[in-house]
Image (cartoon, rainbow, N blue to C red; front, top):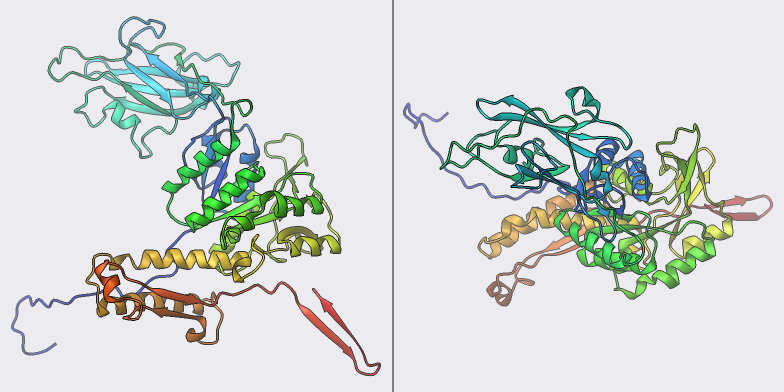
Length: 528
């Protein structure tokens, strides 16, 4: 410590500027759109199979199979959007003070199920008087199995799905019923919403409150399941569900569970390419031969027509696989289903554990739970599928059911590989997040230098992690942000231009082994 200071608190001011970026700063999530009898129709984050079934029920559909396989293959989080079908309606209940059948007067409150379907008609609402003097009560929400008689007492707790204790209709109270039950936090309901009467501060004598314990409770009615025929338009329904994913930030690995309609898949990939941070795992229909799968990709989908880079935002996987039947009471029962959910889980797991620059394929890319493939593929069929950029799923002795393909639908360019597209998405999203500090900063050489430093440090960390090709950082990437691409004109427009070039890694698809026999002069080349 210097002797130039006298005993006191000395203040020294320094300006710290952001010049570093962590790696990575983005989280790739799974995403699923599919049909279900229950569940939210807006993007809902789920982090476990039990969390999914609590929201989307246990009537198993293609969506359930896909999400189950996602978590079984290392997936950690995904956003799910339910396609509820045409004409789906949410159930409601007008709750009166004493008699729910009394249609005279104003209901005490109205409960509305948050997502549509007849499943909501199994809900029962019961109120319990807690403190009549201070107008406090409890509200319980039960879901009663079809055919079960419910008496409304608290001993039916095995069917309790939500409850709110010691609430009031006083809007000035911290236990105000509507604020508590409709809260966006864990205290609020993910099943129903409430609206209705409150205390009138100007008339304290009028204090509405539910009556004493109300026997069997009051049933929600009016829920209607959506129809997937007739007026239902799959193109319109999936497009609407896809649009809701615009509210989700960060890269997504999307699977359309149960959907292989070429027009729907093509439109989805087009949207993913325009968005720039979404990769679509495409399933083929069940029962296709390899030749039919090639026709589906090349003729029906024809993704090469959407844009130059568009096909690199999708990968097709074939054939279907046999998996354990979810919820079956028959030991050993299996079902044949699309591999998309398992592939999405494998991709997310690979991204997290090894980085997006690692191809989600090879002998280590085993599909958890898979028992057998729909078809055993010959060498000629494998060659055809690979040349047509269809990723084959094979049974390999000693390894199990594995993914032996890492190609996007794009036929040329470095981004014809899945891991290259994932790498570009990861780097792009991270650099966007890491350079946000530059917005509204003074646009001059000092800012350009800071932006360049942030980008270079992040890309250097990616290279050190094995994510870019090259012996030196100069061979792996470059960053240009100077007067050559930031002219007086761009400065006047308020823009900062950053040019980044990277050398992504391509997977070793083939191992060529040359074996020579010196004495006989013969040699053989083996491609693996």
